[in-house]
Image 1 (cartoon, rainbow, N blue to C red):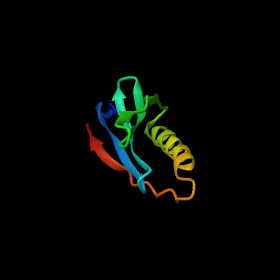
Image 2 (image 1 turned 135 degrees about the vertical axis):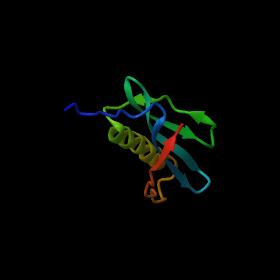
Image 3 (image 1 turned 90 degrees about the vertical axis):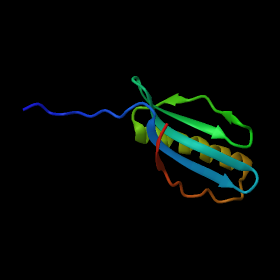
Image 4 (image 1 turned 180 degrees about the vertical axis):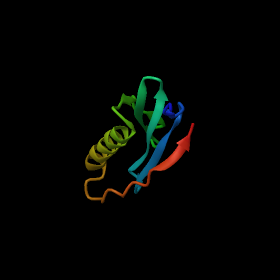
Amino acid sequence: MATKVTFPKGGEGFQAEVKIGENLHLILRAVYGTAVGPTMSIYDVKAHKWRPPAWAADIDDAKIQAEGIARALHKKVCPDAQFPELDWQSIQL
C-alpha cells in the first residue's frame, strides 16, 4: 500500500503582527513560498517596505527567524516596551 504524502501549496503559511505604540508595527510571515522550501519575510508597516526574505529549514524555523528579527528591532526601537506574545494565524496568499 502506497503512502500518500501531501505537500503544502505555495502561498500557504502563517502570519503574525507586532504593534508596539507608535514606533513599531511589523507583519511577520512564514510561508511555503516556492518549491525550494519555506521562507520568512517581514513587512514594516511604518516604512511601507518588505525586508529581504530568508530561506528556512522548515515553517517553524521561518517563524523563529522572523520573531528573532522582530525582537531585535523591538530592542532597538522600543527598548522600554514589552514584546507582545505572537499570535500566528494561518494564511493563504
